[in-house]
Image (cartoon, rainbow, N blue to C red; front, top):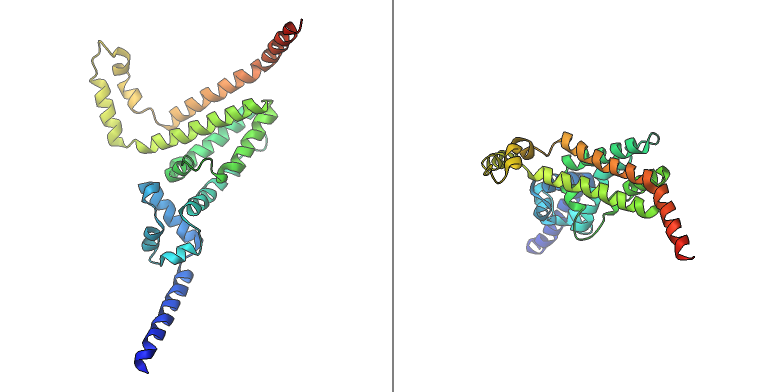
Length: 244
């Protein structure tokens, strides 16, 4: 009788352990731990089994919150990026609103480079950015950009911020110093401007240079918007000339 009871006791213990796992953690705890992993070590370092070990729980407990790794990444992105969508200013010049939106996105991706990596995976655009994209298109639409120009602007702005954030994260202080020394030692007769700009070029990734690049993009969009009436007039003239 005692021997037969052992499997039953073992099954009860396992069941209790699983329930304990569920009580000891939560979806939020899983997301927090997973975010720390991808921010520090990259997307490839995250596995469901590894996350469970980090939390001291069974892998099946993690699967009670997410379907798979892709679902886990999507939930991380939603959690982090929802605050960015909520930061959109309701009023003000469209240039200032765009600047605020893209700065908020950059600040978030700078803090969480793992989320920047999620946004450029082969799976395509992540749904977590949809509210942000909708708000961005609304600002551009209200400013007077036609739909094709608005989509082009959105793509340019989001790509700039995402790419800048990822490269910025990849450059450590050691890399910066190595690059500065390498550029300074270039043959001045062949690279006079680049060698002279070694200090500036090596430290180019900063909040100041991010804002300078963003300003250039928005100034370019402003110039395009100003030129729209002339472009429409030129198209009408070309069209009427073709029908004569």
